[in-house]
Length: 122
Image 1: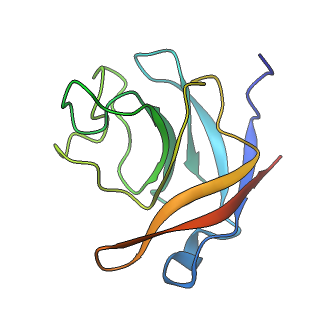
Image 2: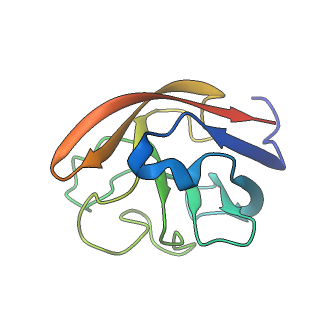
């Protein structure tokens, strides 16, 4: 696997989430699964991998962009909210790093999810 980038800058978010664009995320460490996670500089926004975001037992593994810090001790539902609520997600079996670019699902209008092509630039 490729080494995790220390810094990544986000682009491609929808207008409703445009404050995410241009944020630079710094590698923080690892969650319980061993997956790395990143935090935005000067802001509480995070990128992390969650094997089961609502602890249902049959969740889809995914990378998540969220305003809540992920737990480093919980096995799943890393933001502890009991449901899958966040800015964006992309399903992925690869916990070593999020894709450099890809179609992420974002909720940009209340209750409506759409795909946006997000880029994480090193």
